[in-house]
Length: 566
Image (cartoon, rainbow, N blue to C red; front, top):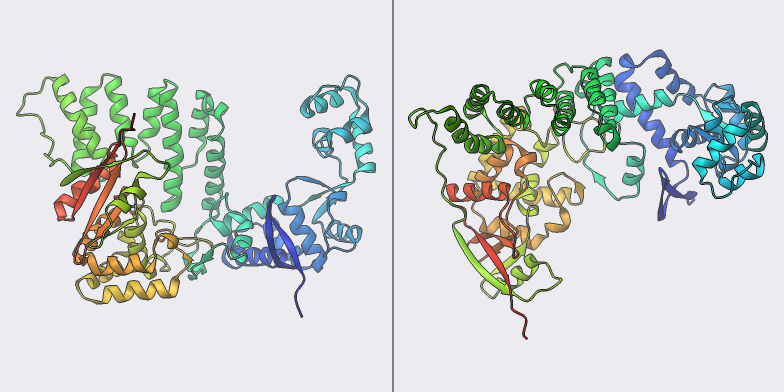
């Protein structure tokens, strides 16, 4: 028998022409809560565990309605807006939720919340405020609050527009944080997957690899997420005192690597904004609590500004000695001569920056008429002929090869790497921690590049995993023809050098690859295309230096516009 199907709305955004089996939402909510209880029962409060216990005891209609109350924008919802085919008797189901302490019906609340339930027309009809013409809704609400007694507002709305509020919303928010490991994902992820918009890889989730190990870690995660939301408020960003208060209120994380990153990222944002607000002393204090880039670079800039050149020089030497981030190292090469000169150091005392050959190896020009067509596409067409096949790939090719070769390594069950079933890769994929935590399997896979087996691994993963979500693989940009050419023409030693560089910091080195790859019968060349007025970016220059050092053929094509006929 065909299942009942119903249109889907994903948290307020209607998805046209999309249907899912009836009851999908209850199944997804059950899956989420059951997974959290299985993994985190020991970290949940009695109140939070009570959500799961009470939910299990509801009828099918009760579970369905509770889902709607949780996921619709509230906190209050009008009963006349709750019309669902799988809830035939709304009043009886509401009574069930109230009896099970899962919801409150018509309970007293602030008048502002009640009035917000009504449309402008309904507000005027029910309360008939004096002088309401030409007022927008916020102004109208203020006028009604001024002219109308709270008790009248409450009784009027309770009678004409009865409302309901779900209980356990705080507990459910905790469930979602535990399940997703963040505060921005929600149950919509299930719907997107169920509709087939995204196919996720299957990887092991179990208690010994759970994201949070202590209750305090969960609470820290919530604090950091709330802080990030505050930092998106433009008004808040202009208040130095509020920024300092926020920074001082942030709890120090324990040794949880991902929470360390969240903490430092938040603190770096606060410090940088304090710099902009001319509060360098406070900014310096918060930068010193961070070891992530650009903490030390910003410290040097502030110390220079404050005239503490010796401290700035000392920090620059520390960066020279142990710096890992290329932007940090490049900054030191620029600023060291300035500091040495200002301090009057002799040439013998100064550290000379390393000499770099000017990239790239080869440059050439192409002339095109101005067109709406991207210059990269025009260049790829112009550089293709009977002897050459030129493809616009930018970052997709080498990222894709990386993702295919290391697919099983990327999705290996490393403690804390996978929080939920909706990830395109492990949480540390874009960090410098990715390689050290998987050193042995990565080195083993790199060794296959010295035999013929690596091509078989790539092709097998391409066949078995096609269409599945992987942060490094953009399937639409990695067709079979391009893949076969890359496997045949690019020497594996070149790929090893590229992959080893990417592995140092996958998030940093996944960008900046040349736009085009041009294949001949036995070789290949990477080509960066620059439109008139464009120039090589810093990350592109770094790649060209690497190409020079390793002998990877690469060039820059400078495009000129053809003169228009007069």
